[in-house]
Length: 368
Image (tube, rainbow, N blue to C red; front, side, top):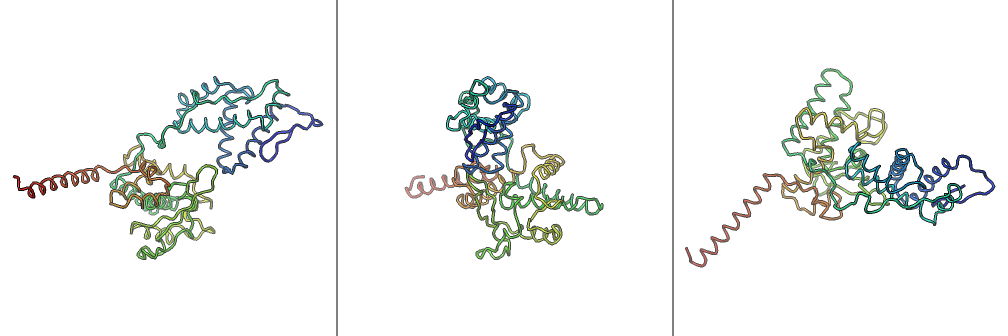
């Protein structure tokens, strides 16, 4: 058997097939990889989907041509009740497996004929609307997820700096990694960055803003690894520096923390590669626990805080939308967790304006 570049299978009669179950399954996975590559999906997305299929096969101990809808329900129940995965994770499993079964059950790719020849059956679509997790709203975050308040950010950043100083005084290893992580947290908030956007920043991604010369060489941050749409490359964008404290943080990191590694990466790891999310998340979670901050605060909360605090400060919503890299204002609206003080002041201003307008009309009419 042989699969071509777009996932179609063909049988070579002169070649015997040993252990057909193993060979057919592997060729199905190889063919699906080729089919997804022809659709311009990213390599990371394809590998993640392939892992989902392998996990389903291992869990059910059944090959794709023997799958049934009952197996889907059993697998889903195990994920939710035993492994306690989130709704979005379960939906991603269903999406990947549904795409795979659509591929192997499509007669255009020839797997029905191969399976009939070797196993006397054929693969079928077993993921339907009635047994799969639907995507019914744009925001999937849990109710505990929220932005940091300004006081929480101040406490967190001061604590992170104190940890770096304490480790440096004691001569312990790891002070440089702690310093790097502290700067990464601040820059994630300073530009409203996702983690993947943050970890890929390089020295060449910063430039001067001729309309804001006070920021020096850090007036603009070029984000090259912005979140992409389906089957599309990374979406780049430029984020303007808005806070005066941002350039000094970067200057100090470059002068006293980063050193001179043989790389352009702004935040290289100890081994010279890119920083992994688990390492930064563990440190952030430890700091939050030691400060008694909410469990709902995470790396993405810096991005939520960025949008919230700009809006609270009176920045134009369209500017915030462009800074965040959102195509639609409704997407930016997901991040608009406006603080209580801002809501109170806005409400008070609206009420006072209504009363003043009413008094002005009364005075004009001459009625008491």
